Length: 146
Image (cartoon, rainbow, N blue to C red; front, side, top):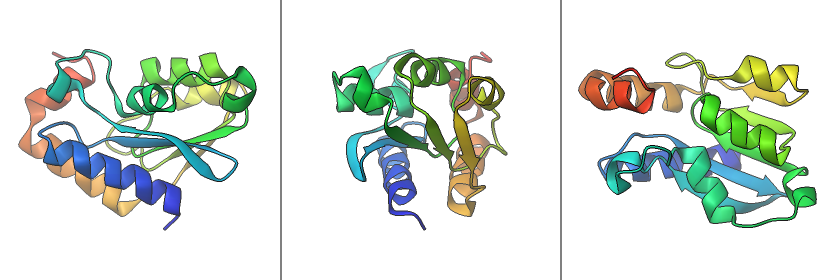
């Protein structure tokens, strides 16, 4: 297991322990994590605090040149909002834990020239399948279905 994907999974598990949606993310620059986060929509009452957005907030203000050299790891395929942030800051590489439970805007990212690697990691898939089964209403809210 890649240590950065493991860090994203650890973030997802933190989110679940806090009563939220188990999606985690880390932003890596030159082999170092500069931002980490997990979906905090439930915990904070925020409509936008997905795992990737939380990782961006944790990374803080960075020069565009830094973000253009980063890799973002996320346990789940990034939604349109999170993909928009990836696009806005020019992150060239996204590593996705899985896209079986939810297919985000990977196609758009690829069209923009972003390298998207999908691992189909069993831990990520199990985390989401279990959460969706146990909390369908929170899941639907998270992806804008209800």
